[in-house]
Image (tube, rainbow, N blue to C red):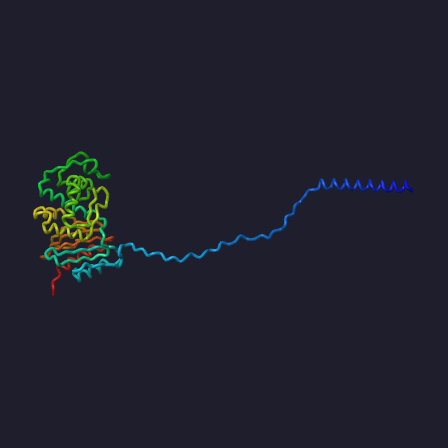
Length: 312
């Protein structure tokens, strides 16, 4: 009986060990799969446009004083009104008019008071310096000026370096637009002499560049230009002979004076012009500077009409 129980126990033990080793082998060879928890798919958040802060931008005018047109005290009222009507409110401008036989008769209208860039109009002051030195005997019709390398302007071929030219020839070349000739003349007469003439005429806001190699050639105002022309007419710088020679040198016809009859002596460029006009017994000076020149001719004719119109 005891042997039988022993045998049964032995068999049970063997079976248990067999099952244990079989299970151990299965676990060893089994692959491990890690299953992660499912996560819900979320669509990317849409970008929400943030409201832009309401900032009031400052209104910047393209012109200095768009609607601030000022008329100088004592100006001729009818003429001032006509000038304002013609020039409008879209551009910066300065207009000055002076009766050369009656100092009390004038008109100045502007929506800008500072000096502005000008080009060819600035040649007026160089001409003044040249004729003043001729008047003093420092320059004559026989004076010659040698062109230096420092005078030359790129692209200009009419005048040769180290060649000498008569002052009359250079003056005419300058008035036709030759910058090299202008530079040689400025060097000859001296920039300080030109500045002295500007001050003597009371053109307080006028300055001229050291040379004319590149525009602008200086800055001025319409009022300063009228002061200058009135000074020439009144003999403040030049005697009658040399003043006449200077006026004859102003033989260009800017749009400002086209269509005006009589003796017209003018100089101008794209943004400015000044003229002495002698017609029907009247002598007057008129000048203009503007950021746009489209009204120059209409303006010049209106000013002329104010002097020549018959009184009823």
